[in-house]
Length: 211
Image (cartoon, rainbow, N blue to C red; front, side, top):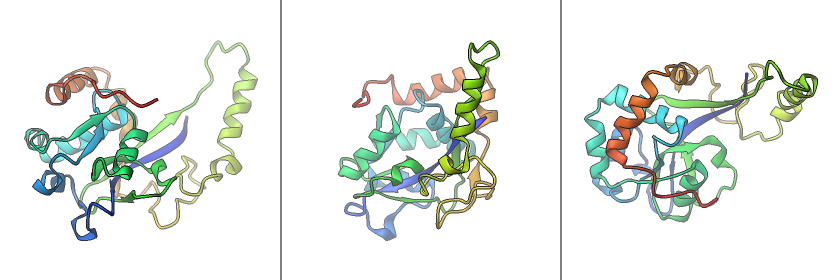
């Protein structure tokens, strides 16, 4: 079962990007003003980012990728480092910022796309069939999915249907979200080919996470 639900938003550094220039769709990341100042995780290295890129090419076609690469984006491991680069001004914008990056503030603002659906990914927990201590595992899952634990950080979404969304944001059931992550990961035959096709654009992982 899902124990976290994490939307992916657009992020920008307000010292580098005027509010009027904040991207509204994936097409806005092709604008010359953002050349050399875009960052995402490697889509071949992270399933959530792979889902994010797949949604984009499903909507705009594979012709999007050569144009995107022509704008000299930067790729790195880990969403924490994506947020850090935008927050520091090393890069100005990203369409690959996890909602958890709202914690920490600073020179990083998150917005939902006005024209594209925002992908949602999750982390899951479960009890192995032959777990040596299934009751302990059940106790852990009961705790992590409790209302008290799920509500500890109001800025985060919960996979529980009876928990409210963060203030000012729509519920996960909103049509503004893309909620096909489970089915996306379940297509085991398609994923290796998809990673290989994206790697032809991004190259292998060379920029490692800082931790």
